[in-house]
Amino acid sequence: MKAVVYCDPLSVAVQDVPAPQGDGVLLNVEACGICGTDLTIFKGAHPRSKPPLILGHEFVARIAEDREGFAKGDRVVCFPLISCGTCETCRSGQPHICEVLRLYGIDEPGGMAEQVRIPAADLIRIGDHIPAAVAAQAEPLAVCVHAARRARVKPTDAVAIIGAGPIGTTLAAFLRQEGVSSVKLFDTNATRIDRLKEGGFDAKLVSPAAYKQALAEIGRSGFDVIFECAGAEQAVTDALEHVRVGGRVAIVSIHKGALPVDLQRIAFREIELIGTRVYTRADFEDAVAMMGRMTESLSWIAGDAYGLTDAPDMLRDLANGAGPLKAIVGV
Image (cartoon, rainbow, N blue to C red):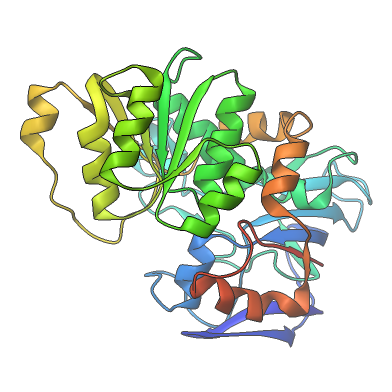
């Protein structure tokens, strides 16, 4: 079968590899998303991923065999978290932040391939009516569901999202779906801002004047909730500066190292700084359940799917700041 294989830093190829054998349910993959973690692996910067590795942890597939409660042809998405089940964190009921958490497509072979084997317990059924390019976004949508819940967003909150990449944009679409009327996106990429405006998002190019204008538009001294989705030090600084007294800042992006943070501002203004990591099983299942209602917005975010053989070029383009907002590989 053909698969997208991480070979070395900055080297990914579509290769013929043996069909997956052993335990788990055999799946015929329909589509797989490319995310920021895949780009980190591509650059050779992920601390755990080692070549050769089949990429992909955001995928939708069809069951290829009658097995373990599934029938051939059933449509599923993969819950990609692999928790140990024995560490203190897992035993406390938080396996999504397992002390040795692993994922398919990062630590184990993933779904950017014609076929993959996944344990039945990690498969969640999804309706046939959901387009493949939308169904492949169940995982990033779950990230957004989890972040919104951690930040306790209410419909009346004034929300800012700093970093309008795939996660930031999906989060804005989700909050809009949930009835949050004031959601403003900020990004440093002017081309992306223009595209987001065309898609009906309230988006602004990052600058001190832009934050000031956005707050004037909502008539508040600061945002109730700010999501930091950029993974940049300046984004954290901006979030702490523009959240209201007693407001909440949720760190959704994964930063590569320690950053200086203004602890005095946090203390004096009683700002709540919230960490988020991936999602719970309930978050993921709820994301799958709401995909029908979000088909239009998620289709816009992804656009058309690319072919499996396009994946290496797509990874290179994305690593260089080009390519679509959300890249989906059709298999």
